[in-house]
Length: 316
Image (cartoon, rainbow, N blue to C red; front, side, top):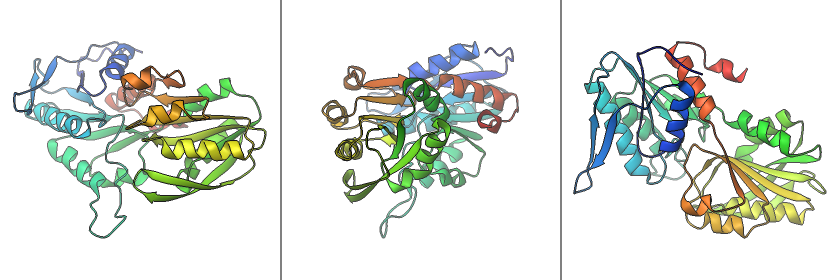
């Protein structure tokens, strides 16, 4: 895939340079000349070292750890392009941080996903391109167009080559049933659900397995794996119910705290993740974790947006 239109400009923050370079290679262009630096007191500075006047600018930045640093980088980059007279600025956000704070779960709680949406639009973004939002309704938090990509088809294509017929796709909680059902339908597999009770933030206790998993290969499907507590407890529950093998996959490998240690010590045989978030050193050294790139999907979407073609056709 290459593009000959000299109005397309692709820039990247520091959060996920490996994915950014992959996307640029697929598009047949180079990343734009920009420097994101830190002043001595920690303030973020940006220098755009080429003209973007009248250009269609795409800036790639995952809002992942360190979340607030990467978010500020994105906002300042967008502001710089706006003030440099870019014709259109699309924020390419493979992982949208703060997405789990999408509603009031207790009195006087913030809706931080909406706040972040307002900040990005106010900074000057004209359009958003993102992958697997934790909740689809977050698209409505923006007053600018949002192109919402799904990494699931890429995952399914990989999983179909790995496993035979006796597969059961498992949702680790009730909130992920729709996602797991879509996986199961594409893989022509059965579906099971983990019934859990969340006792505190980042703490979950598995209660029951709904569905038949005995003698089957169980594949746990989630959008985000953070501390991996839910994942590991779910794997234990599946094993107790007679699953022959337990695998897992997710789009966004946050993998904070002792997540990698928990995965290594669990009954999960392999965890397939995407590259929306770069893996840390510990995760890179984990033999159980396999990375599938979404660079081709994002590159195709960028090219379609630039050419004013349909993005939704990617999933028909």
